[in-house]
Amino acid sequence: DAKTTQPPSMDCAEGRAANLPCNHSTISGNEYVYWYRQIHSQGPQYIIHGLKNNETNEMASLIITEDRKSSTLILPHATLRDTAVYYCIVRVANTNAGKSTFGDGTTLTVKP
Amino acid sequence: IAGITQAPTSQILAAGRRMTLRCTQDMRHNAMYWYRQDLGLGLRLIHYSNTAGTTGKGEVPDGYSVSRANTDDFPLTLASAVPSQTSVYFCASGQGALETQYFGPGTRLLVL
Image (spheres, rainbow over the protein chains, first blue to last red):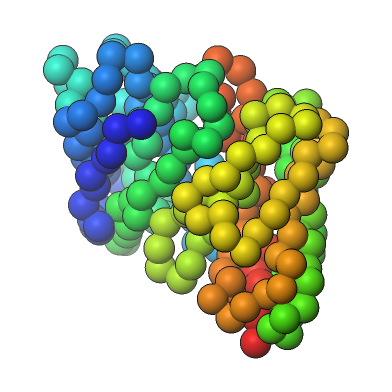
């Protein structure tokens, strides 16, 4: 699975959009981009995933560049409860479960 | 629906003792995972199982063993605990072509 690079930390004002970047320059054609988040002391929580097209759900939007070498997770109206560590992962779908690695993620702090 | 449960919630263990961390899911997911998360760091995969009856090694398998006798249960055993195994342990399961992972609440283990 491709390696990902994320900034270690970011701040965002409450009510503003939080844009979290992720670089995955070695991504291959059949690898999906997944985002999870981990609120302090809890288990990670799935947010969204995508392959090529931009995706949106009730939690966030995922923007994937045309060359698929980077992506951005957007929380449109960040709240204090969105303070968490956000993990970007790329992996091939429906394959060996051993291919499942999380990096150190981005710590997002939403400030009042 | 309980999802994934882990037991115990926390444990203090003397070095050299044997310990089994329990993980049970009620979603009938094929794949299950064990991760450890050291303070301030991301998750590292210890062992995984693609389906009942099969297991595999992740990034950091040394000192741990797992079994997958049925779909629902995936216990993690520390045969002889050492202080470096002090960590938070998360169990997860996944299903389907895109295999989104669902995490348990974690077990906090302190080895003295």
